[in-house]
Length: 112
Image (cartoon, rainbow, N blue to C red):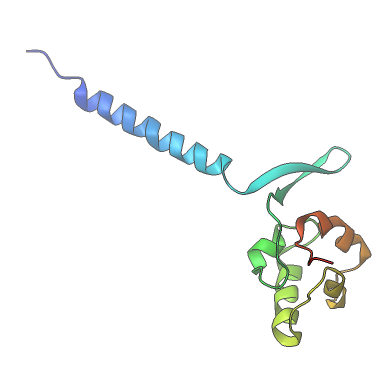
């Protein structure tokens, strides 16, 4: 009696589809690898972030801003109101001219 290969082939096809979906989701994540300084690379957001709406996870994806500084930015915004401009972020302790220049390409700027 011949054994059917259909269940084995179906399982293999299902596994390939699952793997393809996993790879596609990792590739299509809204992040890209971009040179930061020289040969160093960092994972940076591929979208622009609104400082007055972004959550701590979005802010932590910005160069020079880790989870602790992102939490401080959200706390300051909740206590003192929106930043309205990139320069307004300077009021947060730990944010200075160097960080502002690093994140400028990734932050939404209001029309002038």
